[in-house]
Amino acid sequence: MQHLKSLALLSLLCAGQVSAHGLWTEERRGNIEVIYGHGAEDNAFKAQKISGAWAYDVGGKMIPVNVQRLADHARLQPLKPPAVMAVALNNGMWSQTADKKWINEGRSKVPGAIESTQTFKYSLAIYQPGAKLPKLDQMKLLILPEVDPLTVGPGKSLPVRVLLDGKPAAGVKLVGDYRSAPNTLSTETDAEGRAQVLVRNEGLNVIAAQMEISLKDNPDVATRGLFTSLTFLGEPHHE
Image (cartoon, rainbow, N blue to C red; front, side, top):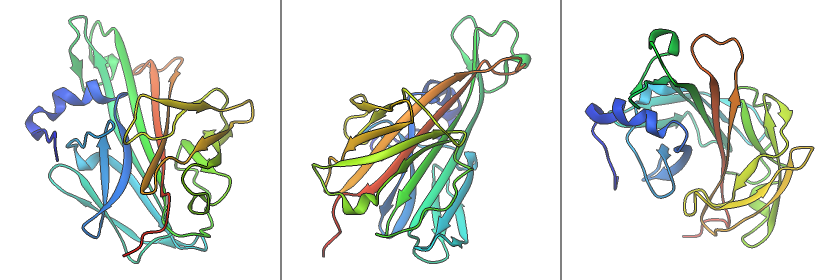
């Protein structure tokens, strides 16, 4: 990992990463690895923050999956090769003091906090063509492909719909290639939460979106931060 950070420093760095960093999965050396980073960065994170992982076969039937919690990241181990995989990370509550220090607590425990947030990160991976997508209510922000993304191909547009808490989300900005160009916006959802996103890569595509939602009457956090990604290969892998 190019920018591997020691876990001793992780608690200091996580707050600065609550909004800037995304979540996705990649297949490496035969394993499905959870990646927490920004663009080409691949950062260490506390594996216990993975709050759930779900695998499904091509017909949408759930496959048991184990989360292997390693020292600096997590690995997903489904019982058999999945057609679809989803994962969620809860980054916890963070509050910023007047001297700009972030503390891993809600603002009710941080006197004089000037900012406070709790962030959740989600990723949906599609591995097999023709996969039937199950209900994914556990993903509070979801980029839902409206056609099979494995059949679109590089240079063509993939129609997607963005759902927030299960409902279409308008005005959500989408990054078409989060892994290579994380700060380049591709498009924005319309009033029905729909958009067309260009498939950029023959290899792994990571389409991403994030939102920050103000909360009322919450004693611990002022905002809820959400990040989500959709990943798939642009073309079938050939030996």
